[in-house]
Image (tube, rainbow, N blue to C red; front, side, top):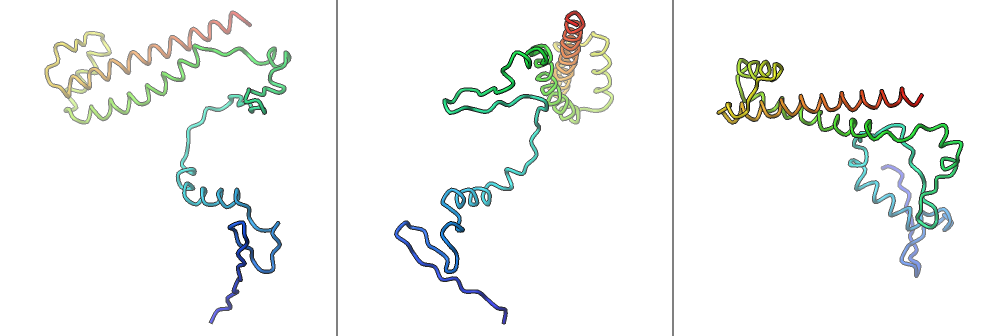
Length: 171
């Protein structure tokens, strides 16, 4: 039979017990116990991958609840760090939307034959695609998604070009 260690538990008036042979300072406190339970229950969810934006400054919060910028609030940092680029920010947001729209385009495209898909893509590239002429709903959804993807790609390209030209002017 395996050796087993029996732990005697003394119940104190605080609602928590103690382990024989251990001092109270060595025992986990209520906050630590709560953290362990939270990790045990939410651990798998907390381990899921999350897409993070890299390079952003995340300031800490001071005692008053305000942003504590520390060294990042100095004049030197303002001179070294380029100003926030709204055009690139919007382009990044549209890039995320474009990714979702491409997934939807592929999904809706699986419901129509390849020949019709190629015809819609060809007419869309040439700019002669008219949604009012499409009668089948699956084809109409595919054509609509394709035009949205095309518009988003053009808008992202224009925003990035605008941002690039503005940066060249400032340098």
